[in-house]
Image (cartoon, rainbow, N blue to C red; front, top):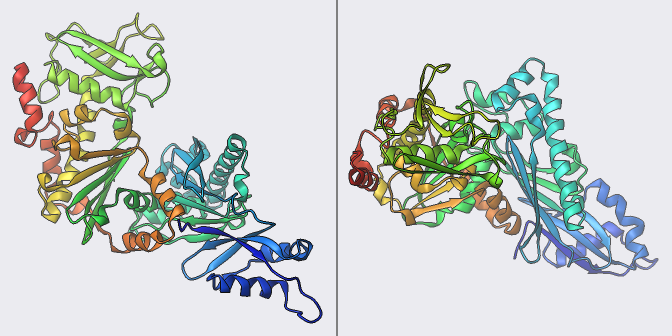
Length: 516
């Protein structure tokens, strides 16, 4: 295993009058003989060399991090500590940050912690945070500090849960989108969204923890971005999805509030990005919510009857993204809604007119079933908004396929990432037309490719070249430049689609029920 960091044990003679070579030079020469050259010793490490080196009789362990072009010494310890060698991998998300403590000798994940990104106090979405900073550039410090506090919280949690001092790890890999990296580095994130869409940096690279304001003695590597919208989290995800090792085209789709797609193989890759919208996470409905205790996550319909399950088995307080997908798919298959998503009041007494909404709605939890004693419903208007969202996701896939001249049945695999596909039923998502009707074995669902890619790089420094190649050679398509994008979206607003021939298995199920 050739990770980004290595621990080298040295047993060297201490300086004496006949051999007055400096501690620093003595160690550098010994490391060069082992193949580690050039090695940069930052001032904090130089200061720790003496008297440690001499008090230990020349028996020390040096922690090195492999950067592009050199090695950086990040720590010196007394004696042989090679068996205590750990690193950190992090997915730096706009809502949640997840971090893993990894054994660099075995590759095993020792501990994992996640927490809410404290930047949320300045806006639940990235554009709100950018607006906050634009009102006063000094506020960039607020966003930076919130990110640092969150990362520091995770370091403390990992230390507590594992008993291993996470802040003493030699290296941390961090994957985040372009705007989030700008927040962390106190850069102007408006450049990511404003014409000419040229960020301050797409190659942030290596930083000592102290430079970022962290109480972390090691080096932090920030993944590069391919463009303003195809960030380091997607580059990291591609490292895990491994499109570049295949001779046949594969599709990678990281879908959440935003959707980033990449199609390609070992010879070429094309990417695109667009706003999928909050509907996929449940936020369009008055009772929509994130996946949390009391959220309806599964729905089943038999004829006129509806049943559901909730997270942790608690009484329902709302419905999350996976529950909404199930609800729509089950209503379509059982004839509660038609191809246009229109509710049929004759299909079930659960479809009721809601006076205050002035429209029909599907009541998925009756008043006596819900935690608050009120009926929970998904209205006709909610359905229309959801169909806009799912149409955008499907249209992005089709436009990318058409641009590169690949038919969907030519795809070797379709890798789905993000909380949405991780927790949603794939069959239901295909039924309502979010994803193509491919053979199910072609689908690979990985909850967090960004985190997985960060760990892959942590454990394999040879992947640095792959990461750079991905970032530099990924061609990005602007969906706004596709002439018929909006026309395609209109066709995709039906369930599953106006072009039913694209969904043969769904068509068959609808025909069997008499709802085609």
